[in-house]
Length: 419
Image (cartoon, rainbow, N blue to C red; front, top):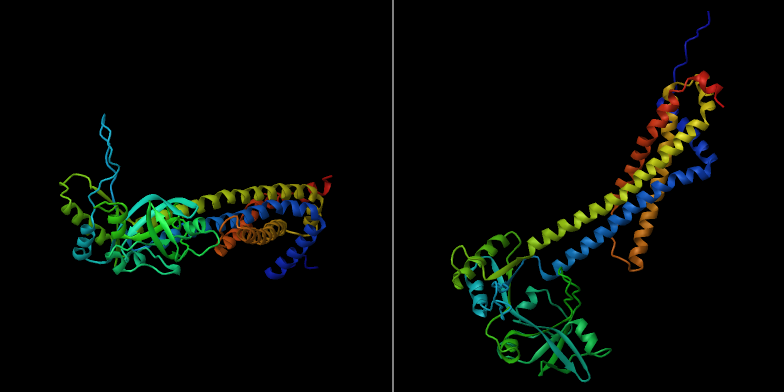
């Protein structure tokens, strides 16, 4: 009696390779439908890569602005004056910060390596027929190191010039290009608020800070000169404090606050008459905000992947209907339900995988073009590309599962009779 037992199935690798080859042939036979079904996945993966790259570029730009000001820096500012109900106040800021406060911080606060007081005011600057209103900053020579100021041409003033109240000025690139278009300002004489100053240097470009202020639209002069020969004031507006290292900054901030409250005789329970800006706190806040924005725009772009998955679902359901007779014939010839299910899952994986690869290429190309044309700073995120590709394949399998199950459940006789 002949052995009618069913032959054992081929090994799994051989079985999958045969199904993959067959799936490629089927998809290649319907080129237009295949391309259309992959479009949503291509757009989704490409959008994820582009948006995450733009978000990371924006995050780096913000963090670089903060780093340009120094990450181990505390900035003490005179607090704004409080308005009293029914009474106008003519004083805009509290004027109790003095150079002596800066000296006390240097001598009495542990972990402090450098301190410089500073004054700021917007004044009109004139050179020949050109004039411009810009920020005049007076600070000690020690402030150049604290604030990461580097000369681009000429030189910086020193402590002797500060103590002797020399009328020397250092221009930011924005001011230099505005007042001296096409000329080297070093050696020229300008007038700041009617007072003559000699230009001895131009700083390197520093860009925009975290508050959106152009750090190059500035003129720096010695602190003593600014206080006594230009503004005629006995107080300072800010004190820059550099800590020894980042871990010591919380303790330095606490010590500075306690010292200034004691020196300014602020009663317990009353608010400070100054504010302290900790660059580490600003760095953390901006970093978290930038990361949240990157995740948000990446998630929005990921919605396009879901749309692509819906497209694959629609195409696969249409394919099941068109190939019902073929499915019935294969079942009649001995194909198992698992074989049919595997066949359609492989087709869905091929669609989403090919779409994911094309999306990675499109996203990288779009990010590179965005940076090349100066539309935005971008930083390619290869982990995001890998996640986008893996997610596209997963989406294809998830949305291809229902059509595969539906195809596998077709009865051979009913499928053969289907027209």
